[in-house]
Image (tube, rainbow, N blue to C red; front, side, top):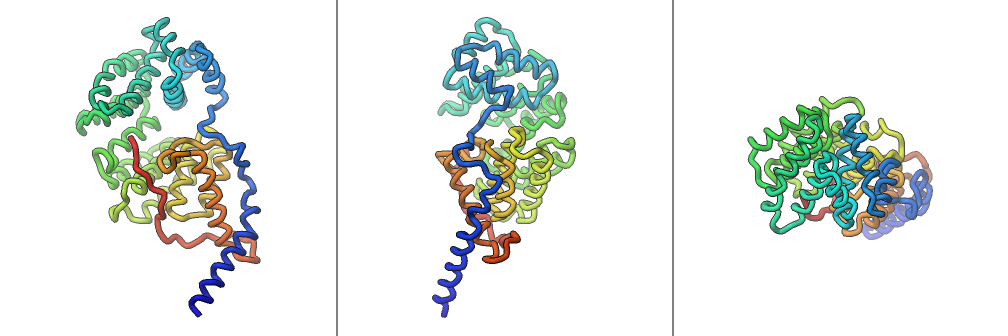
Length: 350
């Protein structure tokens, strides 16, 4: 009787998947339309020019973000330009030679130096050497919080104690109290993988989210704390209710943006991962639809050597899970019971 019931359950699950999986593809772009780290309309032409060795568009873009105090955009663009320069830096070297004191060139150079330092076996020594360059970038425009975000990343890698880190944090929030990148840097410092604990992460992220401006991505900070918990060994110290609350808050943040908007793409990708780990399949599928074609390396590079391929496989898996939970003849969706945190864990880098 037990074997018969198990077989019947398997047959029903297969029938549900066959009936519903194709329909659940509605709203999801085809695999070939999904892009990894696609630039927005401002950054795209800049990267094309940089590939041709021209730095003027990059200089103009970052100067515009500084003039308009678009600190969130400025941070993202500096990160993407530094990432591009890791393999093709001719344009950046020309920019530095032509304008050695340009605060925008110094910013990209500092971000690139910190990234390279993190990748080196001599990480601590190299990161310490970057300190004067970061301070030069900070002096270029005293209003700019982005060099201080870079300083926070550098401090984490050079074993700076809590007192020293708090001094840098004070400098960052004095310039931009709700800067997302600075909050992420602080959360990483407080993580169990570095100088804090999972509880400290949540205790920092939750009040910051409550104090954030409407529409700010800082409101999604608790879901980053949840991600850290789920990928750094977990443990009993964070109850399931706190993880679900973090996911629910990030869902509300995601809902404030249009579908397939590149701005909240990283938060949506992160949220989709957390929802999968919480086995909230229906919610995860909705975020996959909202992501559209904008897949981001984080968090998928943490769980797969092929971030884009891993994302597409996970997307198919979520559809199957949702389909298997739907009634065979009733098309109304239903949520599966939440029974654990699942797998999908790889080692976490910096």
